[in-house]
Length: 52
View (cartoon, rainbow, N blue to C red):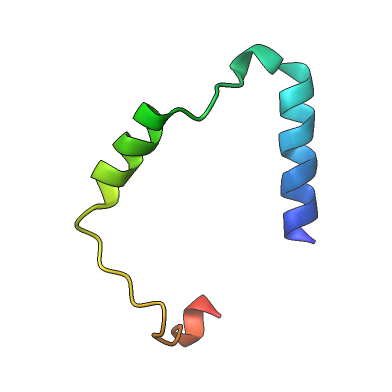
């Protein structure tokens, strides 16, 4: 299970380096929204065969 392995990795990293954790702030989210504001996403579109 890839997801389980990734969650285990994240858990171990957070336990080893708790000082690396940062809160999600409104400014941080605004920066993400700015980066993605011109990206068009069609949630109804089918995935290509290689994305499945």
